[in-house]
Each structure stands twice: as structure tokens, then as C-alpha cells.
Length: 413
Image 1 (cartoon, rainbow, N blue to C red):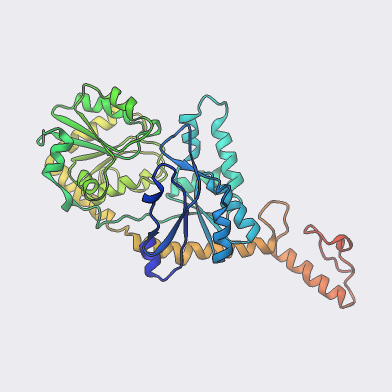
Image 2 (image 1 turned 90 degrees about the vertical axis):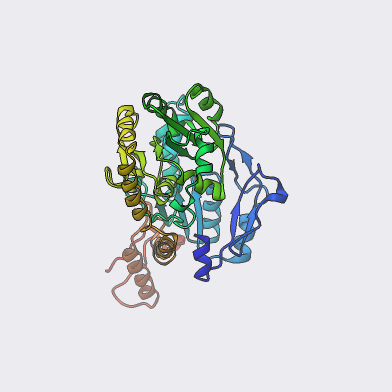
């Protein structure tokens, strides 16, 4: 995204947090844009991420004062979201929130012992996102769910994928040997991503155990890593840890099938990355994944927890010709969704929509049910002008003596 914002000539400044990387190793720029880092803390229930309120430094406020931006774009959920809400409201700057992690499902998986935790999460999302000028989600299904739960002004962020970085050309026998523990001829399933309970990776074990000459490679790290290693002990499973760059591209392209049992994906970029690599995906028919896969054509969709469904799809992909043809179709589908086109829609359509919504809401109130509409407010203001000019037929507007009220209405005599 930054690459194409830079190409378009936009001025962007980035504020982020990372308390786990040494200060001297933190990135300072990307595509010519400055990156500033604010103090943060490791989330105790998920110690692989860093969160921040942008306190006590308030670097965000200093950035706003220095840059006077046309728009603030904040990722959600996260505690920096509250800082973004505060800066946008106090400094009167349009605010766009992009929603990437489905909080209610994470609440259920990690805080399920709290009664009503999913509704608490939805209440928090309504509180925050109803104050945004536009919320972007990553699939039509997620938009429907957000709107159904009372969140206004929601749009779909067109998906994008780097089809140069993820390409079948990265297929490697050396990487395949690493992923299969030297058994290159075996059928190889792969998962790439965060290792957490919400990913439902344990659902893959029965598939692995029932397929002959089959291997599983799990790429990534996360809070459930040790538990998963114990769970898959004694099976044909290799854990590679975190990979990046060409190694990551090669891990995608060198597999026979990508397994995605998670039902918590708002989009699932790894699904697109696997498709771009020419590797068919067996994905969960939940969240944003159905928006990416045409079932039986560019991949497979299976209901959450349906072990037999995953097993049957994996069996079909053991046919090399069938697998290769599906991989070609998956690659062709992924090629339709380049980042340049996605960023063009973002900056030319959706950023503009956020600016328009901001000005509409500033004129007609902040969007709550008690605020007056735009035309009613316009009529009230015109009536006040006529009254002050002592034009016959208009009388003093109720509430004007005490400073006025947005509930006031001009009345003709």
C-alpha cells in the first residue's frame, strides 16, 4: 500500500509501536515515509503483540500538530485506536478505521470465562467505530456482520496481494526437503500464520493421521506454539518457526495444499498468498475466506470443525493433475487483486468518502439519533439570519438566548 501511495505523491507519516524489537533495529522509514515509534506494552494474554495508548509521549498529537493531516487512518482493534479517536475529535480531523482482527471471536477464545464477553466486544466496537467517519472491513461478509451489530458507515476494503513476491517460481526442492524432513515425495500440507487457539490448527491432526504418506509443515510463531508441538508430537509434522522474504515465498510455493481451518479471519491474506503461489487452499467457510475462494474451482471451503470435509478435500488434492489445474486457476484469481488497484480505490474513493462523511457529520451533528439533520440545521440557520435582519414572518428561534441548541427549529409566524 505504501509503495503505491508514494507513487501517487501522497505525504504519509506512520506511528506504530514495537516493544519487543531492540530500539536500534526498529525501522525508521519505508518507501521514503518516516516511521515513528511510541512506547507500548506486551499484552499479557497474547504476548506476541505490542499495544499502546500513545502515552505518556503523545507522539501522535505532536505529529498532528506538525503535519496537519487531511485524514487519520487507524487500524482496529487495538489500544492506539483510542488515541486516534481522541486526536481526531479534538483536532477535528477526519478519521478512517480499518478493521483487521475480529475481536468478538478473539474474546470468545481467550476470555471465554467472562460472561457475555462477545457482547462486551461488540459494545466496544460500536463505541469506537460509530465515531469514525468510515470503517473499512476486508470482506462483504464482515460488512454485513458489522452493520447487523449497529456499526454505521462501513465499506469493504478491496483485497490486495503482492503477486510478485508470491509466485509459483519460488517452488524449491530444498525448501520442500526442509518442510517434509527429507521426504519430498510425500503429499505436503502447509499452514502459514500466527499460532493461536483461534486458528483451530488442532483440527488438522485427524486429517494428517488418516492420509498415508502425508506431511504437515507449520510456519510461524504464536502463543499456542508449545501446546501445538505437544499436540502434534509423533506425527509427520515440521515446525519451521517464523520465515520471511524468499524463504517465506518458497514455503508457500513448495507445498501441495494450504490448510486454513481458522473461522476467525476477517480476510486471510495468507489464503491469497497461497493462491498467488499456485497452491490450492482448503479453507474454512467462515469470516472473509468465502469471499476469496470459489468452492471446487479455485480451492475448497469446509464448515468449521468438519474434519471429514477437510479430509475429503485433501484426498482430492492428492491427485497431482487435479491439484496442478486448481493451482493454475487459483493463481489466475489472485492476479486480479494487485495492490496498486486496491490502493487506488482506497485513496481515490474510500479516503474521499471518509472526508465527505466528516463534513456531513460536522454540519449535521455527530451521527447520533438526537442530532438534527443537515437540511433541518440549514433551515434553522437561514431562519436565524432572516430573524436578525428583522425580515417579517420570522421570530426569534427558541433557545437562542442561552446560546442555541441543535434541537432548536426555526418556525414561521
